[in-house]
Length: 406
Image (cartoon, rainbow, N blue to C red; front, side, top):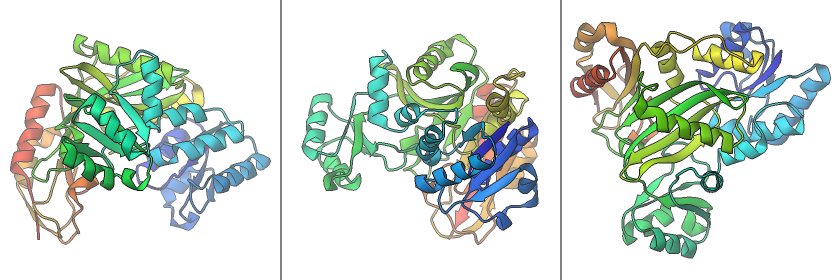
């Protein structure tokens, strides 16, 4: 099978998808923005061919490249795994009659108001929401649903560009900051109180073949706004127990309603006083290298499982559910440059058998802001057979390991 893979070199973990496709027997042509000479020997070894484009989200350029490849040889699949690449890839895929996720499905997984409209029509509980570029309509919506509300780009990923408003003054500020007051089309929705997590799947022909549940501590909006917090993402190995049954059923309904066939998915959810509520979905893998946590937790290579789904239309491995795994982000005490660390050696001595890996940028490295995400500065990934014990380990690391900057 000949698979075209969009942007094999950046970010760095993109190479894992190429590696996996190559490992299951695919011929992989990469389409990326870097010159061929900048790719390392290992990545080049996994690639059959490589095509450079100015931008992989430049649809005419991507279309021209794919059609040129098709004049040369048969193309079976055109795949990508980054949120920003989804729509351009889908449009080119349909224009070139290549099987894969449709433009309709890609749009519904990108546009938040349209997504929620489709899912409400399918009976899936979601926050009340609208998409608008009209300030008056936004104010009227808030008047109907009440505070607090969330404003964010229609196609945002995670908490990027997201604003919470709990009163009139905060709403007016959010209208300006989000760009809505200047005519930008944004999503505005009811704020759902409760615990936040995500449900990820690998589907083949619309059927879930692998699934995983993770929890945020604290919720993303708070984590990305509060410096002193060392936020965590924790993957549970208890997903097959009764408390997760409703979540898994909702996930399957979402996949069916949006017409997702053979794809990775990443679905955010809330659970609180109003019960379980769907938040949003992407028809792609989760960010911050969460698939690495799934591989470590389940004694398999999730990238290879995805490649088997794409190339062979089936998998032959079951998730072991042997371990829970998690990531904790460690923030510098101030912005500037890394000066040093405290508690790292003690952490390694006490919890070495529970460490998966870690990242501590060397002294002198510029820091990144709190809003830059879970892997922007230092981080640690850990494992344990018991979910509750893993939570304790991650909490301990967050309390004892310090990142000093100046």
